[in-house]
Image (cartoon, rainbow, N blue to C red; front, side, top):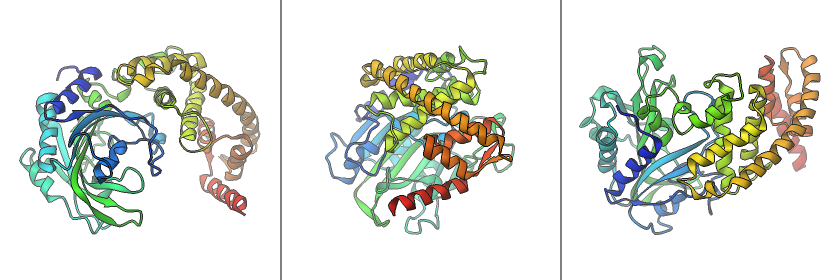
Length: 433
């Protein structure tokens, strides 16, 4: 398999679907427009929801693009080979046009012929019955289509948690999906005989959700209704494609992230695969993209997401011996890598620098005060920081629980999160009273 740069992957993906009558559209902002169900754009289809519900007319029935996305539900997993907060989703959509047969064939031909993946390592999953969604039947149609392309032992039925997607938010279009996995080899696996795409060991890397078959609308009352027309939402992660097509071990070794990693490790004694290095790299990249889309650090909503990411990067930069000036250089490298594809990133240099400098100064003040208090707590602790102490650090000094956990872990301590949550709920109850 030859080496593919991320720019070649982008170009090949978009050209393939343009050649199949898809209109290439630009990425939307990470900040949702007129969508109160969503904090940040977390998928390629999220900004396009009105097209799938029929509220707005799409410019064409077939669309494709590469959409900026942010997901923070996996933030604690950042630091492994492939979890990220910011990622780019290569997407193709059918809005009331083609459905399962064409979507699966499009994905298969691009994987096998366009990019030249080793198809002997390809697995597919489809939706099977699930007691959590008794009203949704198993997707036997997708199973039959895959059986014409793959041997039956490489087609796996999974439940709703894995193979029923959506909605993007708390309500909206959704449906069963079929996903494509690449077997990276036994050296990446757990060694168990049951290891497969459903295993979380890392051997099987999901590279493409080849089709969310949107035929349902999840309403605010939790009930499913049929959409006015059937559509397809398919998305392939550019970062994960790059892992396979560049023959590297992790996303941090691809040409999307390696230049940022090199800036971070240039001042640190840590190796490039250290968790702190990866956290700094991911969070600085994500923070830069959020700032470019107009988000500023704060204590609520998307502003808090940015603050949490930046301060987590600042904390790990201290642990790794990385200066604030190096973080600014890393942010500039992010802009250099992504500005050819997102004009707003190119024009945001001063804003990014000013925001990071201001938030770093605020963080340093908070951290100095918090560290003095934390040392007192550590001296009197017995292997664990109480929830009451963790809440006091949050309530009086603004130190988030996540940061207390990071600092405690560095000292070999744990935090009583259950007690912390009880303290937080009690505080909220008193505030409401």
